[in-house]
Length: 188
Image (cartoon, rainbow, N blue to C red):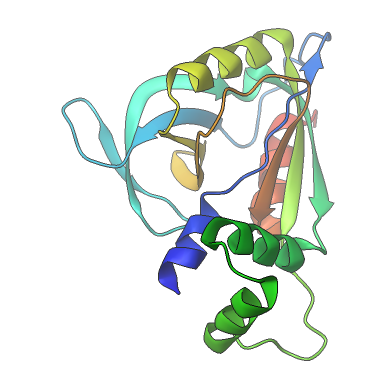
């Protein structure tokens, strides 16, 4: 069962939004960075623990995106998270959704009236930010991209394709983390 849950944490839906606006020059309350990370230690990499998976990651020095590359962020509740998680795991492990659901609820019993506590973050990037992400993801397929807030790794996802487009949607955050992220981007 652990591989199913671990595999899901690496599945993230990204699409991009290029904003033709100039970002606000406000002082951010939260320092936000996206970096490429490795799964094994090497010279020049910094070790960190990813909050979302509990796994060790090894951060590259270069920052892919920071606060200045994002124009705005919006927090969106994700009431269908559990259904999507089960469907994605069924696809990954080539099983019926009902089988996956039974396995998950053996480990995480479903509570009556259960409501998902998951939140998504929709981010509008600057034109330059979208170009940076496209280049970095194209050059780092198979590696991890991590989100750091105030120097701590909050989220990690495997890069499975070059990310081009107009809108960034990051999934499966706690309400607190999603609101902190948005607070670091949106004008005060």
